[in-house]
Length: 456
View 1 (cartoon, one colour):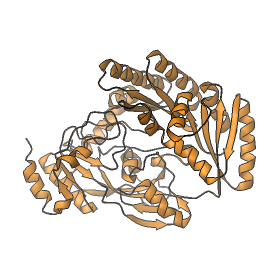
View 2 (cartoon, rainbow, N blue to C red):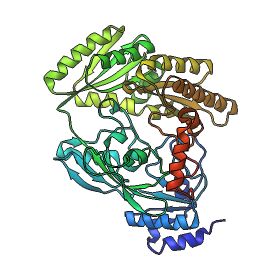
View 3 (cartoon, rainbow, N blue to C red):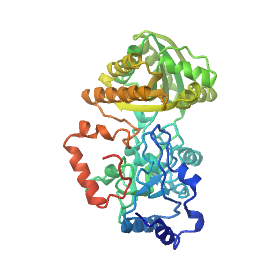
View 4 (cartoon, rainbow, N blue to C red):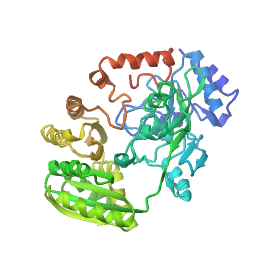
């Protein structure tokens, strides 16, 4: 039995009363995320302001062998922030300062609690933007911890591609840096790659140095409607093979378009649809669009509509980004279970066809969508958590599409992360390499206090 009264007393020697709480309501907020996974409460919630405070928190936790779970926006989808072993939840929302913007080097330095929309609002003053767009207004620390991705990954890459350096507090309280401001390095092991995506199991991120980009001169968004899912996904492969520079390309199936129309009060054709975006200079964009139209028509595209107007573009992408919430409103009383897999692009059409056949076979309410430009798709399924048989069918569906993805040379998760929901598939995917990962975890966190029970 941990002596949490004594731990709280020690925390209050360097943190204010406002930074340490055992309040039941606050603990409940830190005992869940956006997922369907069962909540569990931490014993204490702390709100550090500095790296040094985080270091002291971890020194105390390490001495008492108390679990520590980092917490950002709570928008994770696989139970990453749920503290199943109790302990201390470290909420980084008050470490939310943009520390440096270097527009000439296209580099920024931020604390982990900075939100994506907050950052882009500030960067806009410099004609810059941060590219990773997972949809939710997540914290940058959380996005790094889960190697977040999103709609723009097809052009700019995922979170791991944007990280130049991290300041990390290890389990024993030591503070390290994983990189530098240099755009490339051949020095030492690639620690950025190790800590990005480690989901708080190797250390707590307290500062990030990231790449940013110039805002494109022009952007044109569009919708392309197809007769079948298979043709829509194959069209994406053809666009990429043609060398057309796509900013975003998202697939939304007919069932999901129906939900979008109801929630967002749009009147899109309820058929398999690609949401597209092209970025660049005006003359080049027009040429790209005309070429794209020719390619899409070869795959029986029934309707193509492009929007240059900012308001119309925003309406289109707002509908796509809010699809998860649209499903929640469409099926009141049910819980959203969203899963994601990623496969080689040449396997994507068949993989999505297989997922659609499973939804029908298992009689599950839901739709398919995804960042098909990089082989990543999601299933949004609505389940009644009180119906054990329905929950079992949902878990069966998840297991079958994950197994299928891995057999096709893919991965159990393209961007949501492992958390607790995908942990059971790690051995299937990584085989002997999983032992190497566990050895790294043991070396950096020998007492196992960092986000225990997750990832590995």
